[in-house]
Amino acid sequence: MALPENLVAEFDRMVQKYPQRRAALIPAIHRCQEELGGWVSPETMEALAEYFELEPIEVWGVVSFYPMFRTSKPGAHVVSVCHNISCDLRGAEDIITKVCEVTGAQVGGTSPDGKFTVERVECQGACANAPMFDLDGVYHEDLDDAKVEKILGDLS
Image 1 (cartoon, rainbow, N blue to C red):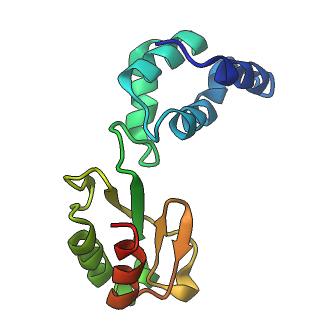
Image 2 (image 1 turned 135 degrees about the horizontal axis):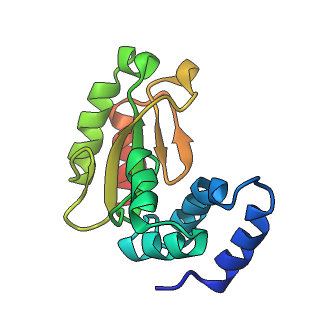
């Protein structure tokens, strides 16, 4: 698989901003994940390795190290439940349980129907309104079971 022309053009501009070409790898991986289905496939990693003149294992090392990169296709909706101290003290575990119940997905997995991926994430910076989750890039705060059912039930 070759990288799409629009991404190659973007990467060509991006690498000019760094002292070494390979320093642009992490932003490039982010862009690939955003543009190519919400995950970084083995083919994408190989194409990135070719573009950055790296070995594929070097790209895999970066992708597999950082938790913000996915190595499998996510569901249509991604629910990222914060579990840091503020959220945890205000009921994050109950929220995670309810999210899994409503979506049919386990933490770190995708529901059988492919609609939802549920992940446990570190602090999202919404501590004053804990507990919270990020649903497809939109924060939902001050959650309780009823709010979780309403928000996610509307997508089922």
